[in-house]
Amino acid sequence: MTHAWRIEDREYQRHESRRGRRHAFTTVAPHRTALVVIDMVPFFAEENPYTRGIVPNIARLADALRQAGGLVAWVLPGAGERSAVKDEFLGPKVAEMFRRSGGEGPLRSRLWHEFEVDDSDVLVEKTAASAFFPGRS
Image 1 (tube, rainbow, N blue to C red):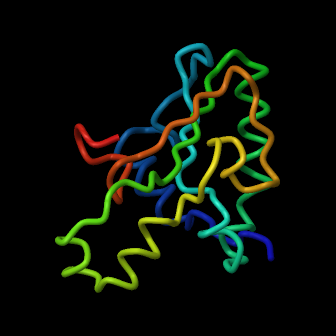
Image 2: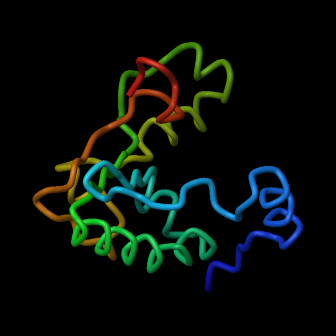
């Protein structure tokens, strides 16, 4: 299944009217740019054709950014400890399922199998549901 997501023309028009151009940045300095890829592990990709549909685009972006001198960072779910709060919030079965969602073993082997990880890439585990919670990843 191809990832069929797109930006509607009205959104482009809204941005163009607000800032006078379509895109926020006119240039990107590759050596100061990172592609951050979050949660692309079998747990989320295996049963979800929508998720798998973005894999080729992520791979192309990663290859192009590396070639241009940028950084690719893979952020994977960490197992962490069992939590009474998560058990209460999600229920014990679902909490345990998500706790184990990142898989086991070396980080490279836990990433979705269609991605190639370069030695220059960064691989990290996140310690919260979101990679963007301050102080948690």
